[in-house]
Length: 236
Ligand SMILES: Nc1ncnc2c1ncn2[C@@H]1O[C@H](COP(=O)(O)OP(=O)(O)OP(=O)(O)O)[C@@H](O)[C@H]1O
Ligand SMILES: [Mg+2]
Image (cartoon, rainbow, N blue to C red; front, side):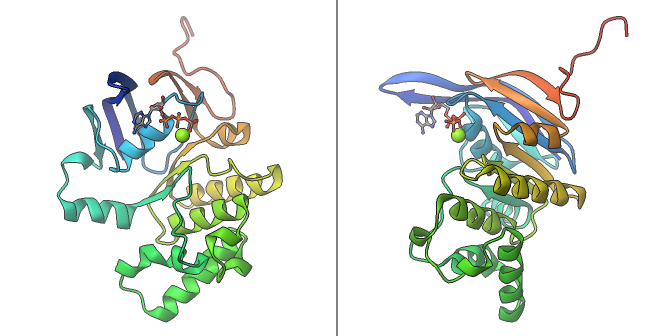
């Protein structure tokens, strides 16, 4: 579904070049469930932003179903972002002057559904993430964990085929985090491809494999439940 091909990203920090991603390559199959781990500053958010077409790479390409997303026309890019992609931002990116329901509704403005269908969809998705009673409140009235769940609802409201999520349980207690992990597992079982940045051991176990970034380099891949380093065993 997605091929990340030799991606590098250079930022300029205080006039000096800084390599945030260094020749990163991997593939994600349709219906895959992949986790990305790595220390703070290792380039995880930068990588997700490049995969979502929010940032351009300095070198390399991201292919989504054989199309280079950074060479897409505006129309193709908005179709990719609107119809295929769900994105959970590390910092939520909710719009402060809209209620929770209005924030979740925002991606639906460009769809073809009737108001009645839209209302039902929003109620259902807020129930799924466990904050139906917050529909008419504003982001500043919500706790960190509730904001996180509103951001997840917004990412899922158009049932994306690809979900990119940046630390979606980072602001949740262990029990609520588990609910989100279970929700992601269910979505994956129903066919959603998932790439999630997380430090949560339970996500490593749920995912088919975990990619580890270190100073912008992909240093290893481990497989989900067995946690073995995915290398070919010599003589096996
Ligand atoms: N727009 C930018 N300009 C300059 N440097 C940047 C920019 N965005 C990110 N960086 C730098 O790139 C590196 C990687 O940042 P990134 O946000 O991708 O890390 P991360 O792995 O997501 O970290 P965290 O776990 O703390 O969220 C950091 O050193 C950061 O300071
Ligand atoms: Mg980050």
